[in-house]
Amino acid sequence: MDEKKKEELLKKIEEYTKKIEKEPDNASYYYNRGNSYHNLKKYDKAIQDYSKAIELNPNNASYYYNRGNSYHNLKKYDKAIQDYSKAIELNPNNASYYYNRGNSYHNLKKYDKAIQDYSKAIELNPNNASYFNNRGITFNSLKECKEAIQDYSKAIELNPNNASYFNNRGSAYGNLKNYDKAIQDFNKAIELNPNNASYFDNRGNIYFDLENYDKAIQDFNKAIELNS
Image (cartoon, rainbow, N blue to C red; front, side, top):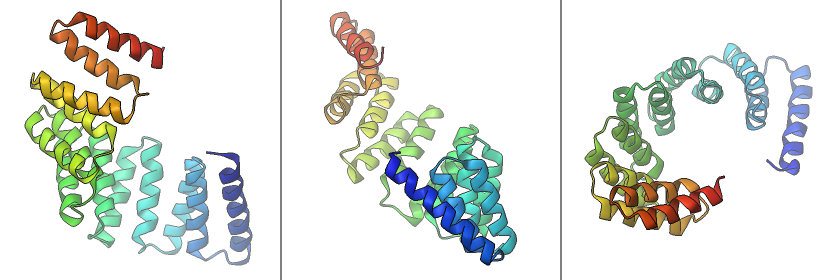
């Protein structure tokens, strides 16, 4: 975050603090100040403000959702899930609530629940590439590589300029020992983002498996150059 953005957020916090002094029962002021703290990565302070907003207005789904995001960033995934679930209870038609709860379930390695949530998010919003990508990652964690490839392909269809989607699909192809397609995807990932060491490392591993050691060494050297 650049200094200008940081100063703007600190100014907003100061403004909302003054408003809270005048109207201490206005939930939106705590919520907005919480958003500023969250954007500054001061998640504990953000949670305090979101909690106060919830105390004053317990029927606003956004308050729970944003507090859930702060808990998630603190890796308190169980608490995040509780908040996302409450947000879903209050507003069951918001795709992002399911998506973020799916991310927390994934981080807890509750992959089946994560897939359920990603699928619901996709049902509500079938045009978001991230939803397919993250469900693909979860399928890959379950070693369901064919399903993962389908999701990565859909993500690529929706956003063909995201290098990580090609990298992820390449990894899934590699797991299936479909090395030609894996290399094609890693090539595309590198074309889109030539400064990511992991893409060269992943392609190097495929070349190593193919016993093409000269190309493997070239890729590993490039990965080291980018991330020594």
